[in-house]
Length: 448
Image (cartoon, rainbow, N blue to C red; front, side, top):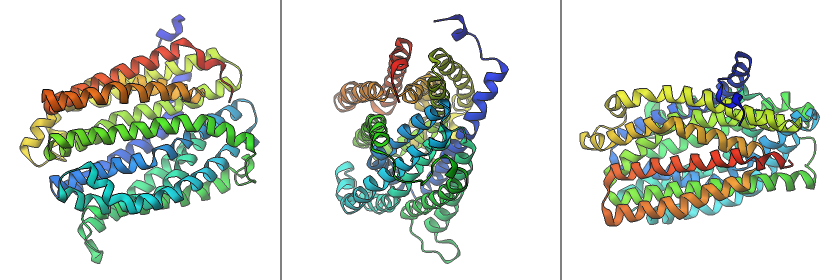
């Protein structure tokens, strides 16, 4: 590794990284902050509502995970076409992504809508949690088609360096989500009082608002790049599937793993499940900016490889990682110093807050290293190395982390703190694996 890897990026490189990353960060942080507002509103309904919405959200994420992998293929191909100087073809992968999104999401959402009560009952033994959570999940599933299309748009806008469009659209979506959910959860201004289900309906409606915005903006800005200019050729769809399927499988198993994580924590107790829902939402405040830096790295890596410059691609990944670790590590400091202040915004029960304190501090201390993993993972995906990313992620999560967590929680009685120590160790090992893969350099030879 050359000396430049260890030096901090110069001003021009920092500017280019932040130009790409800041809009993505703004959009993703707005998503998480408003999710936290949603969590706070539902939290006022009690531990069972909070647990139901947390589990329902992860079940919905698992249901959509494979389809959201389309964003990886769209972004990698759009960035590569940009680097090759073929801007007039940059939106062709987007057309393919939207077509596949509809073909996959429509039948999947219909089947899962009717299975939702049964699935929820399998995942949690508390009948009140099931009663609250199943309608919430059904409302979210109605938005699956829009979510799938939105991820394809996200891949395109980030791939062609127009991430500010992604940010603006997400902010509008999530502001709409908060307003509509507030009206429907509590029944303000004559709207029906739907409780936790209102949060699901609000999220679903705001998702379709975002899809409409994306389509209008793409019609104006991406027509010259091939948007809606015919059905993509077979080669384009095959390449997209080759890139997207491993990423989709990784996302599916990761989401399923997080759902299994909730199931394991739910066996410990409803209070632990409610606390874990809050912790994961707070964790995303740090993880999502790390992912945003990673998406910027994916675009810069893909563009550099399109120009045939693998050394520049390598340097971009390390430069983005250094800036991302510094920024995210700084954002996490308040959670180390003032954990009770943050937790009290979402948890009213003092015993639940007590059990969440140390896990929150532990997560905050480890978030910078986790950011390195997020950046290198996205850089590998931007280079088209989605298959190896899938094998590492799925294998480590399902063959090591989840079996260990189940055994420790079932037979060793490790409790809430032990659960989260295991989670942090698993994420640290995963980051080390992405580090080794990037250093190995096999990604430099992949054709997209």
